[in-house]
Length: 227
Image (cartoon, rainbow, N blue to C red):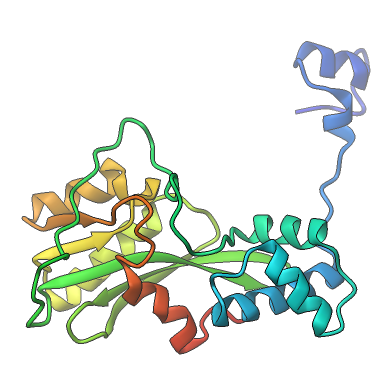
């Protein structure tokens, strides 16, 4: 959009016309440092074993392992990775204000057959030079992964594709359980399922273990290792 060789308008004038700060134009984002990526891999492995670790406990653990780090750096990297200690919180999940929330249906439900309940969630995966996200669909009864999709963005489309792929192969579930994240409460995700007659179930706020099967997928298969 900015033409550095424009015959009449300087870069400063073009930025002014576009209401763009010159510092923004000249800024070049830097890739993560190799040292940070290595430390983030270590943090991710520790988090798989101890998901209740916050930045304080994580810092102490890393220091015992010989890493020269302070809490400020660990907290910054954990925030960048989207990792928080698993415990009861008043606002654990983020949803759009206009999105409809559905009740949790599995509390007293006896799951006795495949395709009775599917669980869906998003798993963070660090990769060389950045991050990707995995949406997995698991059958609650058989514990089998029905389908999965990878994405480098957190929009709802890859979650929709994962469920559609599972349904194309295995048929529709009776209930689909998710958390209250914006991807799963969006009309893009919920409306196709409702159109097929699938009942929607969503974890309650602060109920970090309601969708525990998908949470365990990371530790069980080590899919969150760097690739």
